[in-house]
Every structure is written in structure tokens, then in C-alpha cells.
Length: 110
Image (cartoon, rainbow, N blue to C red; front, side, top):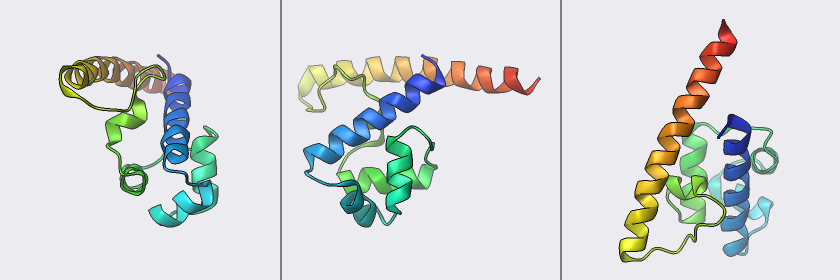
């Protein structure tokens, strides 16, 4: 997974969670104490949020940060063993993606 795919996954999941909560971008922005332009830029893959912005969005969506990085085909519903399997899979995939992204950033700096 490359950094663009990670941005796309983040964008998709924020939109999915926002729509599941029946919120517009404006409503999410207000609830998260962010600008509508910020939400629009994140959902449009033009902005990577800071850690504080991640937390504000998750709180406004009543969600955990990890849920913003789940693959498109993984349900956001949680239950028993399936949830633990998702957490394990997510941790492995996220670690791999983060290592690759960090390697890419440092290799581009040379």
C-alpha cells in the first residue's frame, strides 16, 4: 500500500462514517470544531490530518482512530472473534503501510 492508497482509504472511511451518522461535511466540521474546508480537503485526499484533527474527527463521529484505516470491505460493526481478527489484520497492514510510507519519505529526501 502506498501513501496515496492510505489517503484514499482514510477519505473513504471518513465519508462512510459521516454518512452513516447522517451528517453533512458542514455538520461534521461544526461538531469536530474544524472548518468545512478542512473536512472537504481530507475527504478529497488533499490534506493529511494532524493527530489532533484525527482525534476531533473520531470524537465527532463516535469512532476509534483505527476504523478510519479499515479496508473498504471490512464492516465497521464489532462483535467478538471477528472484531479481534480485524484488529490483528489491521495492525499488521497498518504497520506494513507505515513502514513503507516512512521508507518512501526518507528515500525521497535523498
